[in-house]
Length: 128
Image 1 (cartoon, helix red, strand yellow):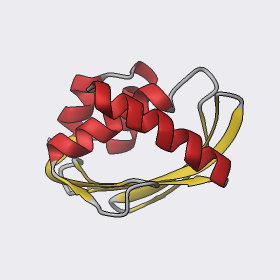
Image 2: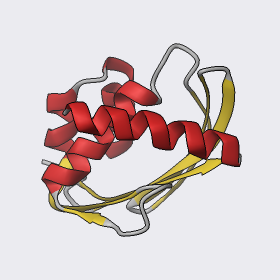
Image 3: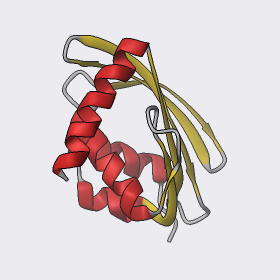
Image 4: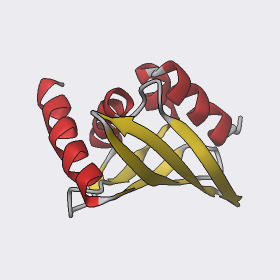
């Protein structure tokens, strides 16, 4: 059965459903952080980063404002306010033929936003 990856991702984001998140990740998923230079490889570490992001990014102000879809990939632009800082960024998502996410890359701007995300994500990852 093929997963509708974007529908499943939007549901995960809306519900902040950690179990559904892990079910959507390929075993060899790769996560690219806006603040960590080395790609994080594997379902466990990718899930850990994305779980933390669900807590840091996905507050009541979070909104995907644009989406561009291709075959097996999508770019989702988002806006959110975190601790009074306006954050603009993109999630670049790739998935395999079964619909499992194989790569997730996050890019964020401006620098002030990167700094606040770095602090908040670091704190969240330490508590997990």
